[in-house]
Amino acid sequence: MPKGQPSVVPDDGLTTRQRRNRPLLAVHTGIGKGKSTAAFGLALRAWNQGWPIGVFQFVKSAKWRVGEERALRVLGASGEGGTVAWHKMGEGWSWVQRDIESSEEAAREGWEQVKRDLTAETYRLYVLDEFTYPMHWGWVDTDEVVEVLRSRPGTQHVVITGRNAPEALVDAADLVTEMTKVKHPMDAGQKGQRGIEW
Image 1 (cartoon, rainbow, N blue to C red):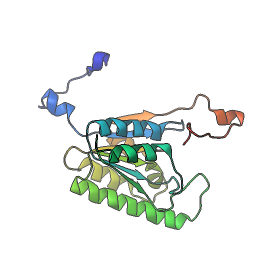
Image 2 (cartoon, rainbow, N blue to C red):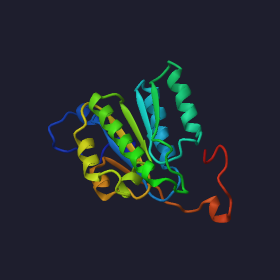
Image 3 (cartoon, one colour):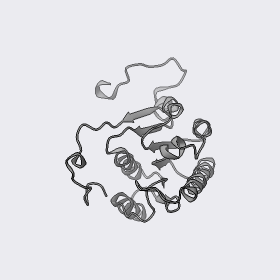
């Protein structure tokens, strides 16, 4: 893709502009760090374009105060770019699992809300953070997710993050990035730190 030029131009009957403006489904998966961070980087770009943004955090604890949330909420309220709505699905889940049943219920209700918002075309960019986990665990039906996302109306972009992205989701996506780990400070016994992990 030198200078942003596609290597293939399909014979699909679309103009360059029509093809350029198609809504995308992006998936950030893999065991490496940075999946959510990359998605929030996209949210910053969307905010700058004046797009309404919906962030849905599926499994991170609702008690966590992550830097991206505060920054995007402040930007969304500034009136200078797009609006930002931040949704936490119940108490969520952290790396120490608790109360699986209520987490499963919260994830399902979160998906139902995403479906309602897609139907209403509420946002131009959806960040479904850690959404691969509810699909991987069978809490949310992957085939339904793929069908809903394939048939979403308008120009709604969706980015989904998390490890173990189901194959059907990867196949349906327009853009898939797999984060791999080469080295991590935790390998040397260093715990996460402010400004880096949150």
